[in-house]
Amino acid sequence: MSRNDQCRKAVQYLRGLLETPGRKSVRNIAALLGEQASEQNLHHFISASTWDWIPIRRALADHWVDARPPQAWVVQPVIIPKTGRHSVGVDKHFFPTLGQMLNAQRAVGVWAASDTSSTPVNWRLHLPQAWLKDDLRRSQVAIPDDVPVETLSESVVEACLEAVTRWQLPVRPFVLDSCEVHAVPIFEKLHATGMPLLVSVCEDQPLTVADPALPAAGRAPLTAEQIMIMAKDLRRPVTITSSEPGGRPRTHWAATVRVTGPALPGAPSGQGEVLLLGVGDESGRWPAKLWLTNLTTTSPASLVRLTRLADRVDRDFTEIADRVGIRDFSGRSFGGWHRHITLASAAHAIVALARSDARAHQVA
Image 1 (cartoon, rainbow, N blue to C red):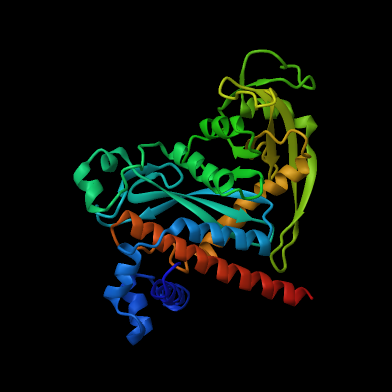
Image 2 (tube, rainbow, N blue to C red):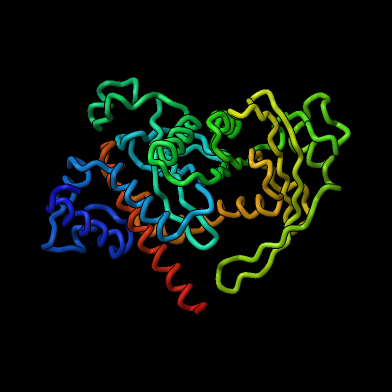
């Protein structure tokens, strides 16, 4: 930040996110800080100030890459329930994973993740057409003119491209495990850019077997589940030990099959085939999870380990991100939401780095 007063308020706000008990609203943060900062000043700093959140996110990403080099970029759609209808982007949505309709904001986070820690480095707020086509609503929450109408899947693609391509972060596999978005269009668009991908897919996803190891090779499309049931004899055990203290080894079963599909174009090199990865859990269910990947030279064991990074992010979101108020912005403006979630990401990184250092000290 270029101004000293903005730097000072940012530090104050970070302290509030880290230390305020309960909900991290501007009012509660101001109450914690007392005479150091008024509620009005903090509200203006978040909702109506001039500082740009993008350079802050890029600096956070660069710092994290240096401190904890990520194994993958994990993409995580986030549900932010709201009681009112005036916060930017809020609308009624049906969420399959919850099985219910909610009044909520939807956002996409891009996380730098490894076995031991993770942190969000970029965010994109999904804005429904009802907000972007209404000039009055746009002006009331100060949505910039250049924010386009896009599907949630397109928001995922844009969040990924911004973080890696435009910020020139290290190329790592993108891992996406979500039932809230249509995975194949995301895979199609990012695969066409040459990005390494590992994306979960539904059991009924139609694909064509291209692997001569299976008798269905070159025949009519089958569902992903049917293909993996046919590939049951190709399974191999993969043992993974949790990085958490006291974590026990767990054995999974994994198999890969080369496939093609009508929505899966070739990469820039012309390579049209991708891998379908099947993973079985300890209960013996096969397949328990299905993934598409263009990491065709990576071993099944390494692919399974990459899938576990989505669990790392889920755990860190619950244990750290929610506790530092990642979903607690109580204002209405577009810029306010982005500034709050950016500083909440920095607060998350502070806690995650401290935890990682503490674990390393215990091991030493």
